[in-house]
Image 1 (cartoon, one colour):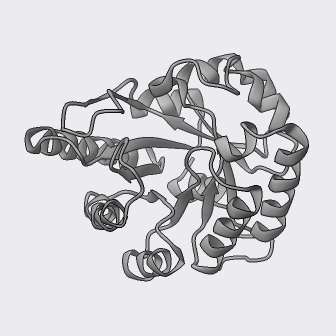
Image 2 (cartoon, one colour; image 1 turned 60 degrees about the vertical axis):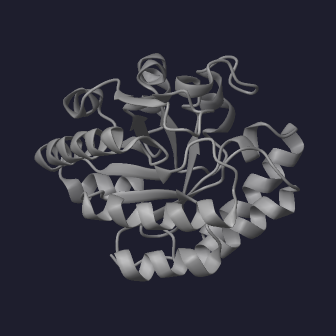
Length: 260
């Protein structure tokens, strides 16, 4: 399979992708809504999402489901980070599997965190790690989704500005897709225009009214992002509310297309 084939599966040209992350157990352990880690796929796979972000364990348990739903893409998380609550550079980032193993599993893309509120020594080691993953991804023709983030930090103006800067580093390291927490419509548009790498926007933890989530997605799409990563703002809400939010988001994502 080629890089182009996998990119087009991950980010379709006829709409904005809706990728539902359910990989939170790698950092959060047992989390509300994911008590049974394999449950979200059957629960949401027919609800107009285009794919899921998942863990190696989830890939193994859901092979039959995805064989029956070949239109759904799979983005495999290949790393973890401890402790996500520490803001003083005390956390530690490591890979948990390889690009080669991801290709053997048949997934469409791999995803890594790119946490920047760590020590300078760990930043250098992280950049080296990312560089090796990018090289392997290019060799195996599978996209890397890289996520610049200040782990555990509040969404202050300073944090948003810093994450925008780190997105440039992710670009320079060779990320094929950049995933970033929503920095606002104007900043999203600037990142899309300047980096010219597909941008996907993360919804983050459950917060605000359902209309806030839909509005943020609308801004994301107007700014030119290729995908939205929406998990907890869907599956941690009451089911009827979650279905309504997802339906409204899906309508927005189908309102645009991208050049082939």
